[in-house]
Image (tube, rainbow, N blue to C red):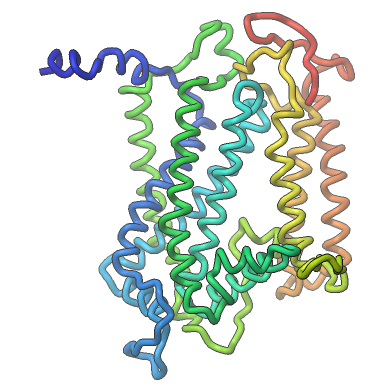
Amino acid sequence: MYQWLDERLDITRFNNKVLRKAFPVHHTFFLGEITLFAFVVLVLTGIFLTFNYEPSTRLIKVAGYTDPVQAAYASILYIDSLPFGAVIRSVHHWSAHIMIAAAFLHLLRILLSGAYKKPRELNWIIGMLMLVTSIVVAFTGYALPYDNYAVTATRIGHGIAQSVPWVGVAVAQIMFGGDFPGSDHSIPRLFSLHVLWLPLALMGLIGAHLLIMVKQKHTQPKYAEKVAPGKILGVPLFPQQAVMSGVLFLVYVAVVTLIAGGFLAHPVEAYGPLSANTPAVKPDWYFLWIYGLLKIIPSHWEFTIPLFNGGKFGPEFWGGVLIPSILLVGGLLIPFFSVTKDGQKQRYLELPSQKPVRTSLTIAGLMFLIMGTLAGYIGDSGMEWLTIPVAWTLLIVAPIVTYFVCYIIMRAIWGKTWPQEPQIEFIGGAKGSAADD
């Protein structure tokens, strides 16, 4: 039977070409796999949720409520009433958090180790787009419960979309299907983006990412050069890597289910259906730094360019569009500001201390995000010391101080040759002076 199939499908060649691909065994490499596992769980739990969710704002009567409620809100109540329904919804919620966190840490590992350099520039860009798309997918799911909290939080995103000069109204119309809340098209539009179009885009990006990774092979720790120069030091994709990945997937499902059972996500009953009351809301952690920027940017920071209509530049644009866009574009361009020795391919991971400038800028950027997140807690109980002037000082000063402290530490760690550039081995065993990024 095997010979018959092999003659027609060339299974032996496929096995030697693909299934015997070597994968380096290093714990940080599993961050990418965890991202993939989270996406798979999101798709599987999402299928269950779509079977029981009605993307509509039509009013219906629900037991326990005097006034009619929106069908979308009633759907969540129904899902939570099903056996394990609340747990499955919670697994979906926490997997979204884990996917974004794992993707971010995966990109951070690649950045700090120099694995984005030639020939992996395209895969770095795809990885950045995957992270952004994952965050947008999470945002489009914000409004779907259509409780008071979800609507209030989504309204902030609607305002940010509208703040883009000249095209903001059109962007908001395309994404939200009209005013939010208020339009009957908003929930169906966000639902279609959340369960169909954006996941399809993610699938395409993931597929391209994996194909390019298999074609270009992994980078690997520097010690592999001594053990197997010119080759990938690791285990074959099948069966060894497949078995490890399978075990890791089962562990992931067990851990996220335990978390979901212990910390049920977003109890809609606590906030109630849409009403005139506006609850105190805070976005999830991956949006909190933008929320913090919006809180500290003065309302008078605005001006209008009287060219056509809609040329208004206001606080929501500065904090919600411009600064995130600058960080995104800067991240996409990182590979093009880095070089390898004589244009050769980057095959081995670099130590963070080996590139003190790159490492220090990365840590300073993280500090900027942390300070922006901290600003999101202005006005909270117990945070009276955190005023807008204090938040501005921390947002500007902390990243600068972090950069210089980190740079000094990195140079000290790298060796006694400071400030002379370290000597490292490059591809093919050639030696030379390491040029910093």
